[in-house]
Length: 241
Image (cartoon, rainbow, N blue to C red; front, side):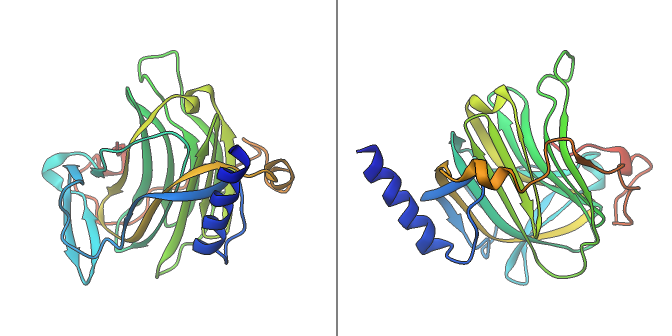
């Protein structure tokens, strides 16, 4: 039975993403899928910021009055999964794909026009837990659309932005995941073509892992704040949820 289930998942992955190399996970059944080409509505819940349809895609923008980055999330609870989507900077300083734990944050891929960071989040903010940066890549994300993929299976996560890839592990990742969502610092970021799928570990993961940087091996200094249209004196220091 397990072998049959794995073969079905593998076939689904090949059919859906024939042009993508398998990394940590083999994607399977679709949990949620949207082109993000309609006005934001349920099941999305916007906690902060302005979320709207602009030129056929979803746009998120920070609002000065919020004194906080823009945030929108889905209500889904997840276990092992793959998230894929595309984004485009439209003036913002930063954006992220964020996954919560049942209590507080769990993990994220944080992106600026000049850097990509893949990390475990601080899960309690008051100690003893701390954020762990698995990788921070310097880059130059030019105009146009960029692809993001987050894979979480067991105690592992893997993040990919265009051709930048890194992974890490934490016992926290074994717990239930919740509320996948987008954040935006400044004005604005466009989003499209979101898919969330169930996943199992790639049987070739150990071979794939050997080709990737070890956690913590590629951690460049944090880039200076971008020139996105953030508002207020504290805009560059604010942390999106």
